[in-house]
Length: 148
Length: 148
DNA sequence: CCTATACATTTGTACATACAATTGTTGTAA
DNA sequence: TTACAACAATTGTATGTACAAATGTATAGG
Image (cartoon, rainbow over all chains, first blue to last red; front, side, top):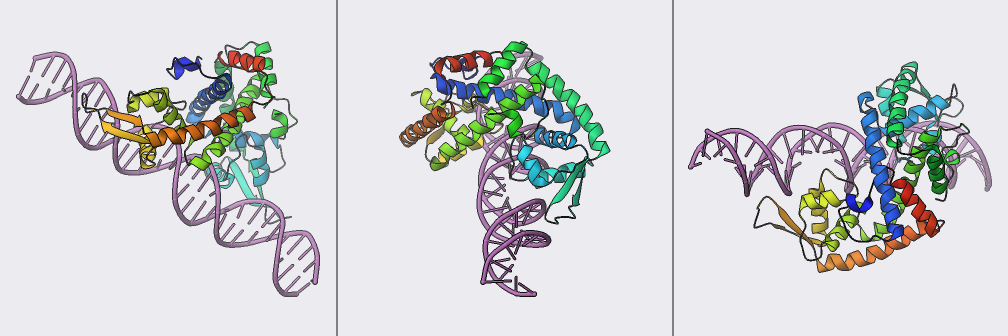
C-alpha cells in the first residue's frame, strides 16, 4: 500500500500526517474486508463483536454497560444493536431480577452456531489481510501500536 | 494502548486477530481526535480532506470523480458532501463547459482561509496522537503499514 | 441522423450513528 | 417515608452513509 499512489499525489506528505492517513487507509481496508466477510451472515462488524463478547462470557450474562465497555468501537446505542441480534434470534434479553435497571443478555445456541461460521469467515479474512506479514513483523507492528 | 485492557479480557488473543483489533482501536482514537479537532469549524474529517485536495489542485478545478478518487475514505455520495461545503461557502461548483456531464469544483478564498485554521488544528491533533513516537518509529510504522 | 451505450453526477431510500432527553429503578440523606 | 440524585437502559431526532435507480450528457455504430 502506497499512500501517495492511493491519494494520487506527488506531493511530499509530512511523516506525522502520512502516518495518520496511512492508518486511516488501513482501517478502510479492514472495515471493508470485515463487512464483506460478514455480509453472508447479515451482521455488522460490531454485532459480530458483541456475539464474540457474549461467547466469552460463558454462562454469565452481560448487561448493556458491560457490552459497551468491551466493544471495539464504543457505540452510543448498544441498545438498538442488541435489538437487531434479538430479532435474528442470536441473543436473549431479560430484566435482571437483582437490579431491575439492568438487563441480562446471553447468546443463544442459534447465536453460538452462527458465530462459529462467522468466526471462520473472519479468521480467513484476517489471514488474507495480513498475508504479507511474517510473525516477527506482526509482533513489531503490535509493539509499535502500543505507543498509542 | 493495551488491547486486552481496553477489551477487558484476560484471554490470549491470537496475534493476527489482535493486530486487526489493534488497528481498529487506533483508528477509533484517530477518528475521535479528528472529529473533535474539526468540531469548532463544523466540518467532518472527509470534508476537511476534500478541502485539502482542492487546495492541492491549485487553480485547476476538480470534478467529482477526481475528488472521489483522492479521498481517504471513498464515499458513495461525494455529491452531498460538496453540497455541504457549498452551503458553507467553502467551495464553488460550476458545470464544465467542455463536457457538461462534469462539474468543476474549486475552493473559495473563504474556504482557503478556513482551511488554514483547520490545518493548524489537525496538525496539532496529529502531533498529540503521535507524541509517543520518535521519528525512526514512525518510519518503521509506515514501512510496516506498506505491507497492506 | 437515430439509437444504444457509456459516462458523470444526482437523487431516493433504507439503514446506521451520535447526542440529548426520557423512562424506570435504586440508593441515600433528611 | 419522602425527596432527590445517581444509575441503566431506551427512545427521539437530526445527521451521516451505502446502495441502487434515475437524470442528463456525450460518444459510437448502423
